[in-house]
Length: 480
View 1 (cartoon, rainbow, N blue to C red):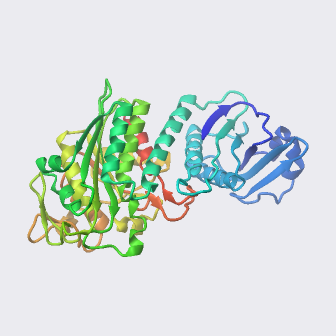
View 2: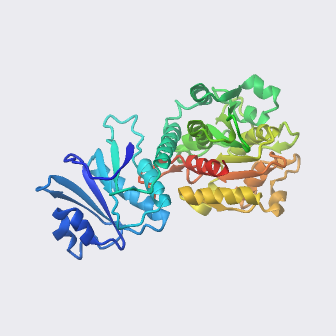
View 3: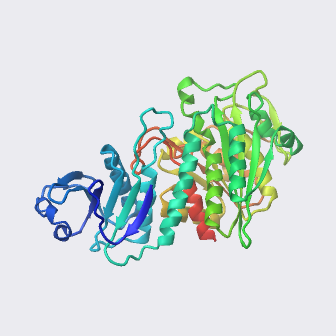
């Protein structure tokens, strides 16, 4: 969808004019702008509550209107709700061309506007590749504001670029598991590297063995497609900060020998969402040419049962010499992330930020609207929380409580990968902390936010959300 800022209404009998009636906005002023609506707007009962919407057609002017009781403009959350409501109503009527009228009588901040634009894009997305009858998204949306506007065109263009990268991420996560494997993810990363002049390094079986990346080798041992670790590097001409991003890429999680129940496997194609996020961020960083050195590490494997599968009771020795007892093969994400974190920490970046659909416990704690953040570095934690608030990909801090470390230790190895007896999200974060050395580190558990099983308040469609792409872009832009 193309979003453009204009300062006058266009003659467009085939589209719709959307008019948000913000709280405090004079309906009389709207009536002056649109005389055909005057009598309708004078009715006190029309659109009495926030969120109510009404289509109306003017035969005299041959214009279709969508009136929405839009709430206020002081909170970015109102912008997200408004965008979700607008796009859901437009889709109901299969409308392709839109003019969104924003009255001069209402103060709209750049933050409100950019959230509105982001969530208009996000709610225009549908994954319909395998449907015979395709959905019809909005093709063009004009933001109409009379006179000069303080909204920077460059920021609008950057938002559109970022939202294209979110679509890239969502398409990867929504794709069927037979088409998303370590092999196809490696090919996707190679295509990104070629398109955006990124430095790529791919470790397959021999490279994994050579570097002691035994977590990936163990988890992927039973799969038909061998595991992989991808490194993608963006190096601008001038930079003063370096950040490593790490993403979990279990392209399908059957649970290994600790096989999941059938209904728990239905959405396990999304267990590679962390890897999809970091690849999408690299695409966006290169497009935006941010002056920050960024390296993405995507750990890729399929967690399958089979004659070669790793077993409960096995012990994995990592490249940093730490040993891990396998208690449950369905706690595999931390095992492959440990390899990626070791490799990332060897580069000595200023920070390592890791995304993973890691624990069901974080879903129990925070639901599908907030991701769990675990970070001991105050500066990094604050920057991530500020970025989250700005873009609407919200984080809630969970403590890396050092007294819990005893619960991740094993009797016959340094650590164990499961059976933590409560607080399993926090203890999984403590486990990952063991593999980053002294590098400032943030673990973001997106198990609830990466993939929606039902529409949410800000996203009106289930499936992949792309959560993390806009968060990281905002963080890196602020860092730059």
